[in-house]
Length: 480
Image (cartoon, rainbow, N blue to C red):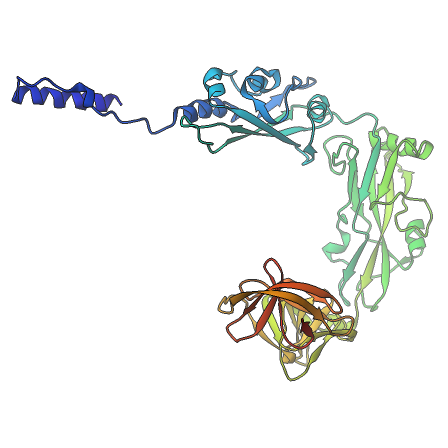
């Protein structure tokens, strides 16, 4: 603006030198308006002070917040001790009067640093004051109007409030144990495979959502035994171990012990004692189920005291060995679409063991996404169209699915019902607006209301049964 005024002054001086009798008309001088709206500048300066992650000192808690939620007036937000606290150097660019004239309000949302949504002011203050939680992540949205009264684009800032030191809860109220209860291995796999001696994804979370496995304090250390057993009871009792170097017994099940080791004076050890005495007041689950202690209960676990004074609990996981037939295939990943041919009305499917699946098949001229392809020593080739379901390559044509030339066109309004008439067990694939097959299908024997029809490049007709989802007309589909 200063440059504009200076230029106007020079222009006036020039006019005087040429025609000294004419008075300069200063009322017609035009100045350039500032590029940034004044309200936007004020709100931006204020909001930028909340670009800071705040750490609460050890053994202290944050000031309690007085405001939380949507539509907080800027004056209330500005005077709130908690929000003043999380600014790095104290609020310098306040100008609250200007922000108030701009109709500024603040929306405050939060989740804990463990990802739990904070729903109320009381919950926010609970997380801020609880020394056993790690903190909260705040999203501050500043809403306002520009100088001409239009709704401005909100300014969003994120602040993480963390605790310098998090204490483990002294009296745990509950714990949720989870692990991979079973795993599948191919016939002929070595028992020394690293996947079989891993930690089975053992996880223990307390009632605050804190992970107790491999934590810095009060840790539970997971491990998996390299011994295998022929029965659940043998694994549970640690007796009659099976000498297994290679899983060469097809369709067999072996059992393995999963262990979690913890200190005898830990909060988790206290929880187990309290749960045994007062199950109505203290909670304990394994894969979502309360253990009963019965050998026949797959969620059961037992505890013991080890020679070094630590304690541990044990769980049992199952190892399922596949068949020779399944192991004879070489499987690779792929991405594409297979479309059944038209010389048969239905094409059969095979399971992982290459056995025909009863009452299941794919209709002629239907397209299906595939994610894996496999071949065997005889040169047979199959595509996987669903978990445990394969179709012979000779029954389909394969496309990598990258072409959109089949996008649906000639879209017209319609009113009617499409009924799938194939026998029970058949599924008809759905297509997107681009003409490509989706990861969804409709079961036989169901009926769907249709509001539009369309065609693809080959002239095939489609019925729209949901937004972006089309059913191809043809055998097995009746429309009325």
